[in-house]
Length: 77
Image (cartoon, rainbow, N blue to C red):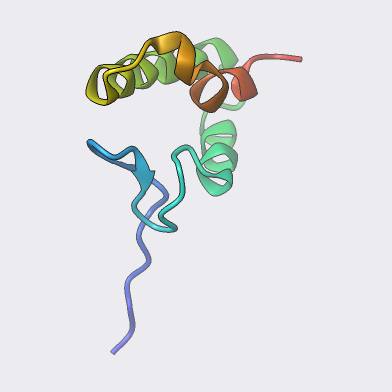
């Protein structure tokens, strides 16, 4: 029987990748998101800001503490 691959999506409330188990967004998720939002960088950042805020609330931390993990990598250079 063939195993079905899981997408590189976050699991809540741990915010780990459901496929590889590392902190989300993992490298594969970042590449996928960049492709999905190609040409719409501001929409990607907006999406990531919403997820960052949700993760901060679930982790009991500030959104600023999660900026590097969730948002900084996606901003235009």
